[in-house]
Amino acid sequence: MAAVVDTHAHFLPLELVERCRAGRHPRFRVESGGDKPWLISASGTRFPVGPEFHDPEAILAGMDEAGIAVSVLSVAAPMFFYAHLVYLPRLERYWSARRML
Image (cartoon, rainbow, N blue to C red; front, side):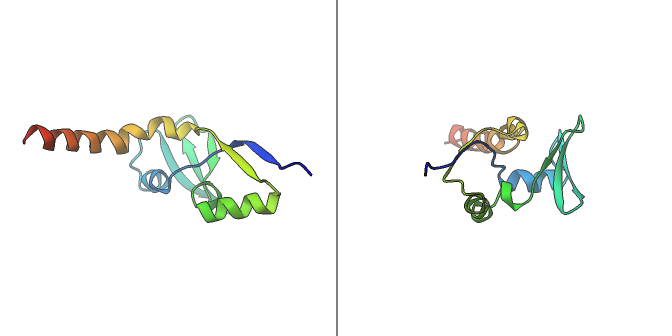
């Protein structure tokens, strides 16, 4: 039997989900709906954001349950608007501290 490869999988860092849940993301928010939370874009596009999208143990359990051996991760739309919120401020602090030396 050949191994099953999921060629369309996404991962959202929990930090991003929490940022959206707290209202600290300019383009996305998290709302409860039915049995799971949803990440909702400014245009209304919805993405489920349960543990199967940010918790490695839940991701692996879901893969096992579905018989998936390998998943190929691709960038989810919210990630395009994530780096500048998290990494740019860190880089700015780093370089500001180095300039003061």
